[in-house]
Length: 406
Image 1 (cartoon, rainbow, N blue to C red):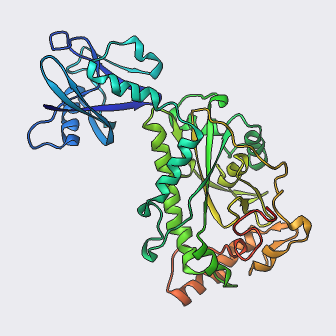
Image 2: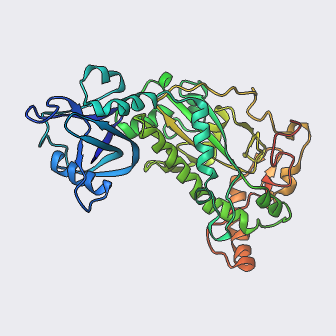
């Protein structure tokens, strides 16, 4: 049996195919770039070498897409196809008769080598993703201990995520763009345009949003303190956010590996923060507002989002060029789940900075408390000199781990 490798290289929604030279076996049929594994080579090494020889550029393998065994009249091949990308150089037609990038819909227009039949079928099928498929991927990813850890404390950073979906055509996206900062805040399609250099139809774009709830252990320890959160909370903000960002990268890759344009604003190079006369500090993408639009929850008096899993949580999102069924928003008011309107003052009582009042959340006072009180207390109590946060208003309150009254 001959061991062969090939590369599945996507450029947006199109993948690379190559036409075999007329004088070779299976001449003028189309295939994926690649070739035989030589003695002593790994599959990845063979793929890099073959692509350099056939395309004149550097290609990096990034995990196996699938493998097949096929019997030709003249040989039997074990073909392993890798997800791959061009990392440097320009693609050149050095050995093939032609090189093209095609969409899934164009597959029937080309005659492929028989060994590629199952591969092409899988490429077509992988575009048939459902909301449940995406939700399962996020939960499975965060079920892996190495993906969900406070690192040196050897504890999980979060409980498993809840996931919501929204359409980029939802009227709330342009509403919040105008409300937050029309010249700074970006629409979902603007993020995709920045990443891919082309325009996208909002009707064909979805936003996937998730909530990562703080663990019961972290919440219990935070609830017991009145002036400065415990180290579990600090690590959840630092190492937990590293997990959140890695999750965003994994979801982005999950779609890009399927030829579906995707961008996670939180890890994009052009994500940024800015000063705001109206809101003190703003970013050009808000995970909490996205979660609100995606049916995950409503805002509280302290500006936190109260989801089905409560307010003690972190949020993330990825924008994709694929239509998913939007999650129903089971609320009509931006603060519907907050009980302050019914006289609740729990988050005000929990705020050691006095930054939460019936009028809302004073960000400047909150940030000053982080710097002037939390930072020295963390050094004094734990010898910690890293990034300091509070968040005491998220625990010891009726909305800590659920929606009050539901």
